Length: 246
Image (tube, rainbow, N blue to C red):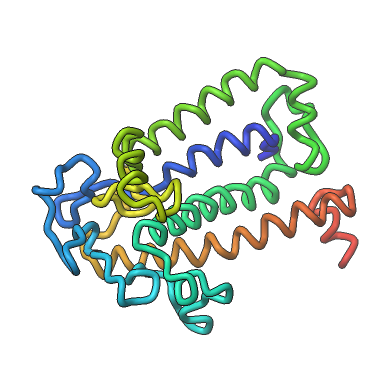
């Protein structure tokens, strides 16, 4: 479908919520108090079958697979010794960007071939869609801004400490990184969005699905930036560029 840049952005916002909903077998603790949550390694809450283990790579979070294994070329974990809070924040960012990139990659390939929105007048490389929509439907950006704001506010309220609590942590630990304020009982990326009920019911199943999502998201981030650069250079759609190579 010819998904214009703002439509693609809106889809990406929805993608930010593509975490997994809680079920009876694996608790997502965002709505619970710490006293209600099973405690695992070193007193860290157990969420979705995972309990942070500071002695393991990335605190034991899934995602380290062959052939790269424990891939950390900048030494963020081994060299700088990130805290569990910071590792969770980095994972939250990775999962979120991966989800957006998966939607963006799909938008590039499908959106440039099928374009029912805005009367079908949005055409050409996806890189130019945002500017075209601004010309034909400037009011759309009001709805887009509201959708982004609502989605991000929901994600912040679900996963992050409230500002007073976050500020108190900074006062208690001035050396900690500002922004690493995810709730102790929050699993990175799991904001409770699972309309199809796909969330596995076991800890091993959840870890496997999370690893698959991470791998696809990592590939999509590379693919999306590649398509963006390619269209910037060639000023052609991805499909037109592929045709010239055949």
